[in-house]
Image (tube, rainbow, N blue to C red; front, side, top):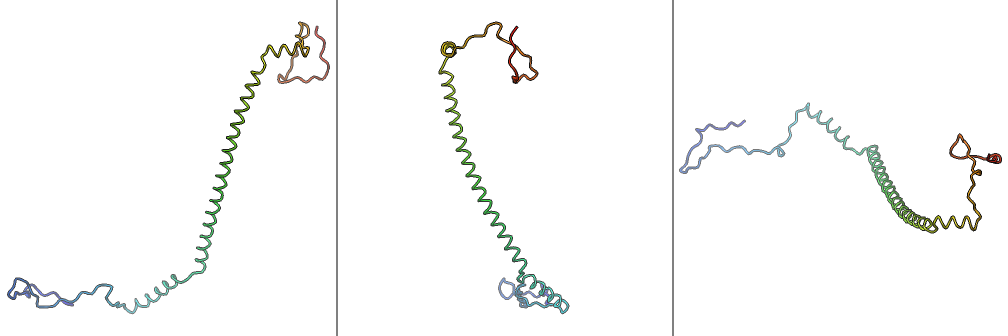
Length: 163
């Protein structure tokens, strides 16, 4: 190994610049150095190289797995986009039907209002009495029944005469 010369080796030769008695060795960059590997490490390096070559080698199973995964992913994306398109179409159809329903409900309310205002109760009473022959019930004609079920009454026989 080269040792650095002591400071006493530096001298001046007529100028203020220091001059050295020796020429320093050229430093070699790490990537330029030749590799010197001991014998026992060379064999380990060969087995490591074999493992690296094997790992970098074309692996058919892994390639098939990756290709299948990509195909499945693309198919899932296509199905998702198709379903999203169908959902959007159905949502648009629902919106159109809701708009039609709102228009029909508005028309129905207008017709119901016009029907309610078409005849007054006096006109209905007049037609019922004068044209259809309706008469008001007299005091003894109204019969009251007690029923267990208050929603409706089924008549299985004639109504008895009032007392």
